Image (cartoon, rainbow, N blue to C red; front, top):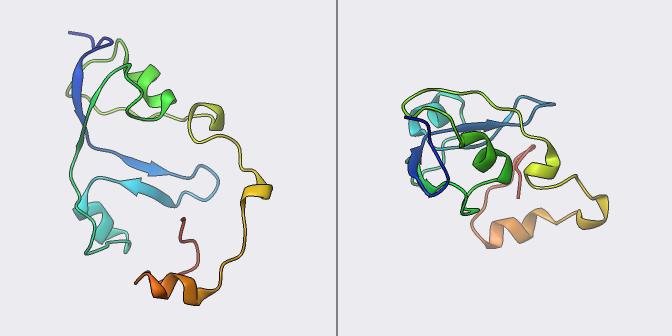
Length: 112
């Protein structure tokens, strides 16, 4: 039965940056460990959303309509349907100390 607006679904995903293939977000602890990005403070588990209620990126929300449940899909989302295009005016350099004050161990490629 195809998914429709208002349906609740549980999603397990791995989100990657198209240009670098680096993982941006994921719900699988096993995959996090396998890719050396595991964070002991993160609770890895699938997310439950209601389709069409803007509880996930717009591109994913729209993609799920009319898809079958219990299937694996691969999707490419344009910036406009995700977080928007990168705006250099919103980026700034932060001293390492600022992260360490918050118990964050910065490393190259860390997205904040």
